[in-house]
Length: 488
Image 1 (cartoon, rainbow, N blue to C red):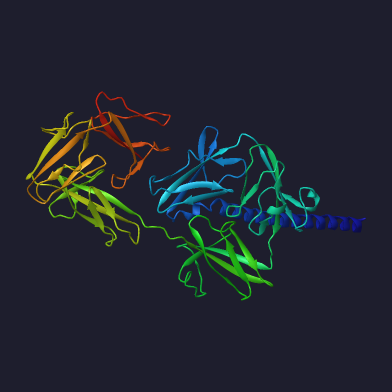
Image 2: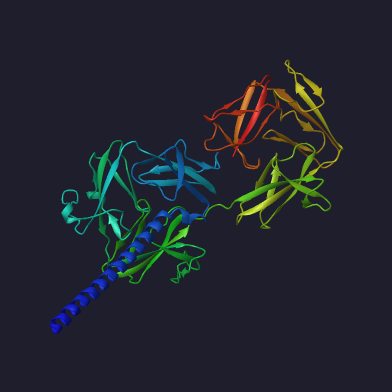
């Protein structure tokens, strides 16, 4: 009896130990799998965020109820881009454009810009079934038992099979390889089937993107990547990154990057390990111009024994342009016709433009036009209903008058007499709309911009423009006037 009891106890403890080992193995494997999946999701969701160092910033807003909430990725199925609400800043001639095509958010920008993409949800449901299959000829929709159904889009080790993926109503199912997400061109409720196959695992491909804080350096001697630092990523990098080069351990392997599908095509006869490098796309450097105006109290500037304070517009009559100072020491700032401009810079920098008070030796005569076309001399600049006459307004000596964005300035070097003419306005009321940029490089718009607020407004008769909640501008004025409205 004791011997049998000992054997029974031993068996129980043995099974108990085996059970504990099995549980430890399952928990460890589960944790590792969840960690890898979370890493993939993290990299995918941050494919936009990782590009903050570039000159294009993208903010994605998704409508949730009555308010928009910021997202780190383009929403998938069931959402569309609200083109009327979406925009890029700054606006005007050099504005960037934002579009949503085949599931991709496309930004076209000439320089530094920030874009806001607003997405709304369709008022119908779109269901998506995702399968992984081992055989290319297998149709998972008709033979689901021969495929593995998964809840999430698999990582980049799996390739989307567009040929056998479809939607019940015939809509096109679009896969964004860059962000590993789906979209569908459907206007009604439908169910879509997405099929994936594991890529050719004989070829291991490692992806790298240029990063100043990266620890990986390409030692292949390629001129496009030599000396640059890189960071390993799990997905092909998106905005402002371009394919640079690749290296494979075997010479007979050839890679090609397809920029339209964001896929890497492989031509190899056997096993190999390849590394693909993506560089930052070069963008134009930006120069911020800060206007400094001579005041009684302030900070030192370019002229000894004079003080300057920051101004938010170029000062008018009674001030002259005195010079500039740029922090990088190489950027050149020029001033002409009431406009400040900086030459192309080799780096982002800040420039200070200084304006100093002129002497009292400059005499200004003001003339306004009558209804019969003649002019009368007045004591001050007209308050409204008149427009500056650039042709007749002149100075008798070497001083130069400039009128820009409603501000009249004079570049004087000594004694002078300036005759300033204003004509009667042809319109009773006129409203000019601008995007504000320190009044040095404002963008004139043909309509009221969306998603902005009024930074400042100036009406020639002192009136105020009313900005309604529906995004329209209105003005009730008892006298003719011209208003410049600056949005930010």
